[in-house]
Length: 105
Image 1 (cartoon, rainbow, N blue to C red):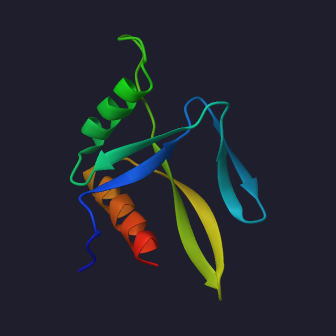
Image 2: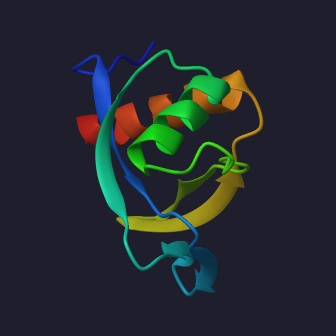
Image 3: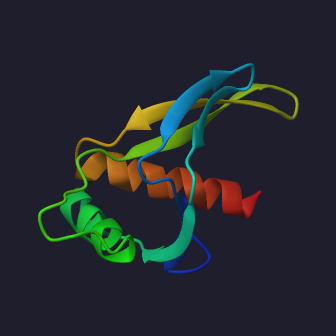
């Protein structure tokens, strides 16, 4: 079992950006990325709501998709990133576990 050192983690959010495939894998780009802290144990809907609030979106605007830049080990000290769309609560849990593993390293 892997546990984070803290009950929260930081996220970098790219709103209305794009996903670009590079030699290192997928990367996210946007004009105004935001860093914010979020607690573990959130559902996908709660995460969307948190993003909506943090991005100060109008009530009629919605967060439709959330993608995560998933790291894959390709060799010694080599990572490749793949954009994974979060579709359910299990995906959110997996994302947090991966972030925790990175924080431990």
